[in-house]
Image 1: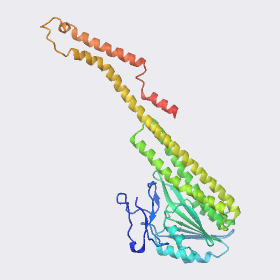
Image 2: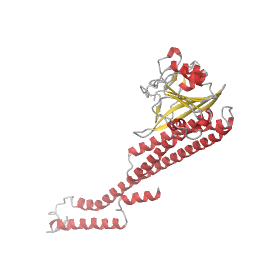
Image 3: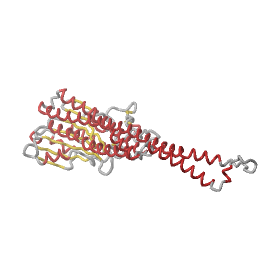
Length: 405
């Protein structure tokens, strides 16, 4: 994975990357699973407030929803300046920005909303840890949104930045393709629930709650994948099975890194008592906090299950090896006495020199008698091994594993 670096103006257009893992045309939103060990950092000497636009980011698409209890205005495409007239009204305005590909539009947006340069930097530099920051008349919430992929395993991840004011909420996403906020938009447009009767802080809670709840469909996919792996590990463990287990463990670690600081951020909203968050909304935020705890508990449970799958995989592979060795041992045990007899009669002593040099070689039925003795020995050993249970097949072994699991 390419390493993002905040650059000074002199270094604009140059991205320093790891030479062995550089990836060209990296999309702005991260596709799992990136390495959980990778770290992003500011280049020493970077000017505070410098905006690094991720390569390949789509141009910003700005939409507006302005609503009251009985009235609503929705505009799909607006400019930053057109949003200014809605910020000081009694209605609640939700300004959505999807895409980070135009620095000029972003700076104009920051000017309209009066964003501190460091806030704009946190919004654009999309590797920020989920957090809460308080500014004059504004509350900044940085969080992480995940959406399951539709055609393959895994999930998409992107940063969502919320700027809460007295009568408005500004939300900024990395790109418009993946989103879990359609339910919020529908509730506003169709006047479902109490969202149109509440202020901007309730809207911020609703968006944050939708983002947290977006983890559950992703975890449901993980549950299905782990269940399939359990059957595969027991019935037919292969090297690909081990790779799948490692992939799930790494993706779960990535999810854990997303939700853990998000839990702390929500707890900060409840505990710190910012004047932009009313007491009645804090009650709802407690429910959102409970959802983060559920997500974390589910992630930890799945991580323990994958650890158990690793143990079962190693046991299954070891058991299969033992079965192979047992089969080879049985076959060797049967053929060892036969090889001994064949070795004796392969010494080619001259029977004419002495009557004691293998006289049975001159018997009329000597060859058939030797074969009969060898066959009797082989059959006797097979019967003995069968009585000892050494010829049980692998289905019995699999059923034993199933009982233990």
